[in-house]
Each structure stands twice: as structure tokens, then as C-alpha cells.
Length: 180
Image: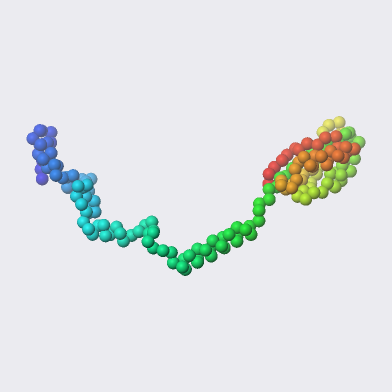
């Protein structure tokens, strides 16, 4: 169908009259036909459309009950999950600590100091390597590594026990503290 010159009032009137009862112009590029299921608001759908919608229940129906087999399987899986969860060991948090012990002077026996420090034994405490680090004027400090379980042992207890060796230790510092 031709509408004539759309720049003139007569051509626009013909187009308006044509579009009064239609939603689009067929045959124009980029205009698709409406799908069969969709229709204007004031037009009712046929009975077959509502029947098709009832066939598929995407969210599950309240009317259908779970079978005994499905209930038993679900309960069995839940029991297996709970038993695995109980058997799983708890995570033990540990820390790696680097301790510095400064002696009184350059004549302090550092091997004896190391033996005294390693004599400290506690549950959750593991001593690691050590080294002597020069401080100045011939004095060396003892650096020793240890790993502690956070729930069982703290740095306060270590500091108390190490500074108790006051014949060898002037002071003690925590040089590094890292969570493992």
C-alpha cells in the first residue's frame, strides 16, 4: 500500500487513517511480525494457550508429595554429610616467632644461654634454628626461631621464662611474629 508523499498533510492523513487499527506497517525493513501468543491487552487469549502454560511447573507444585524413596535418600545424604563434618579435625592456628635475646656483656656464654632457652618445654612449642647476630663492641645477641600453637601458648609466657635466666639474659624482644 502506498501512502503518497508523507511530507504533505494529505499523505500524513492517509498514514494516520491506516495506523488507527494497526500497530505496525508490514513489509518495512526492520519490522517483525508479532508472535502468535502475544496480542493487544484488550484481546483475550484462546483456551489452548492457558492449557499449555499448566503443563510445565518450573517451581515445583505443592500438590505433589515427595516419594518415600526420595525422603529416605535425602535423610541418608544429610546423615553422611553430618558425619563427615564431625570427623573433620579442627584447624589449629600456629605462629612463627623470631626472638632476640641480648646478653649482659661480651663475656656471657651464648651456648649456655641457648641451652637454657631450649630447656623451656611446653605443649604446643617447637624450637627451631638459632644464630648469633653481632650487636656492637663484640657483643652478640641470640636469635632463635620457634613455632607455637596460639591456643596453648603465648609470647608473655615465653618472655617470663626466658627473662628468668637473668644470669645470661639482659632483655628479650619479639623480632618477628607471623601467623602460619
